[in-house]
Image (tube, rainbow, N blue to C red; front, side):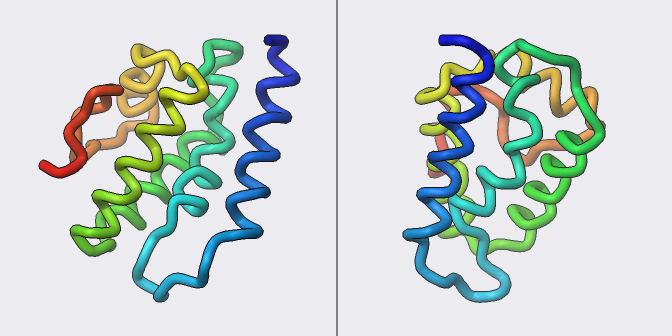
Amino acid sequence: MAPGSSTCLVGLVVLALISISPAVPANAISCTEALTDLLPCQTFLLGFSDITVPCCQGANALLQSYTNATQTDRQSVCECVKQAAISFNINEDRAIQLTKLCNINAPLPIRLDVNCSA
């Protein structure tokens, strides 16, 4: 798949999720919000570009929302991001690099086989 078509596909998926997502309480984080925060990281995570400031800003925004969310919301977001990473064939090494390059202290190991219930 060409790099442009992958970007288009993820964009369409995020738009579709936004249009069908129910409203969530102010302190909750939805799957759509998590994926939207990470959208600027897509080309980096797929191995097509270097890290960018918007990617680090999005990853930090996700971490902030994740940290302030309930346990149930954190588990849901973890599963959502995990499934998206698997579906889009994210480069796991790049995901690990993202946390280091953006100076993020991730509360969970950055792995495709992470146990989101832990």
